[in-house]
Length: 387
Image (cartoon, rainbow, N blue to C red; front, top):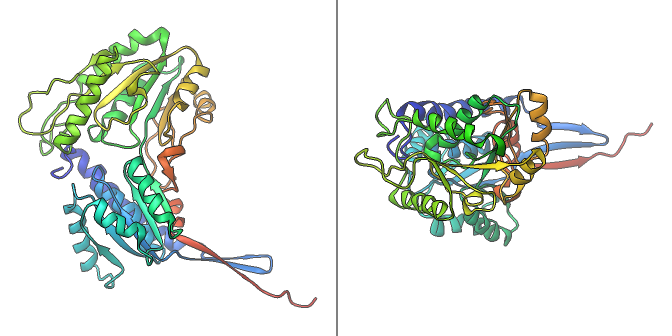
């Protein structure tokens, strides 16, 4: 709550409760994993990839650290972590916990610093076998470029512009409320946030009223205030970036459904009003990752048009489909190129694979899927016995 600005109640559950669950789950995954398998005259074994360089962001700092170092260590790797210089304290506390738990020296290593300094060293160092990176798509491209020089394994969890598609037969009140909540989590500083709400053009005015009602429920306030539902952004630079995007949207003719660029009267902190803008699919805000509490509403003509709009992005990380039936929602969801899709408000599953298509990255995190990213295959062939 102090480092990132997520309200305390949510921070307990999401920023700390989630990582604690993942540490226990990766231990369980490792215990139950099939490390060797007979395949014909071969024995296929799984082995640790080696030394892993982990570079993590500030928005869900302890979660992103956990989703890398916990499975890597459980797989038998050693790790070098470079946490975000914007939110490094949680990593230092975690290092103390790991030390107190008796983990041997050299298994977990913490190096604080900036991406251009420490991150570039991890990407190029000849004794680093793999780099696991979470952050912006631009920085991810740089990591891939550096790692390619020594052909390291690279996993990337990058940006997103996830679409929440509300079909004409959906429960609109539940769908709009759920989409607004999925967008505003962590003040919108979430790579998989549902930041595009696609709605039937014929029902735009209905959606407009429902969105206003949903946004009104978000009380803005300091992160340490138990009553706050929307905290400040992480920095002045991030606040200014988000406000600039809002102004761009308005300049391009956006319908201001809620919020806007005016600073809320909440005292100290980098606050931005929860904002909803009605835009066209061709507008800037339909493509750019804003990383703030900004939801855009895009009307569509029919389901074919909705799928086209949903896929018209360089990203493919998250998303949602809302319908009167799961079957109808799944039919549309299968056509959307993205790594995770919530069907009618389905909750996050920490054991399911998390990661993206296209420029949202490669590789997966969570559960056995994230665990296997840190393993190599080795096949040992045996001469068949006579007869």
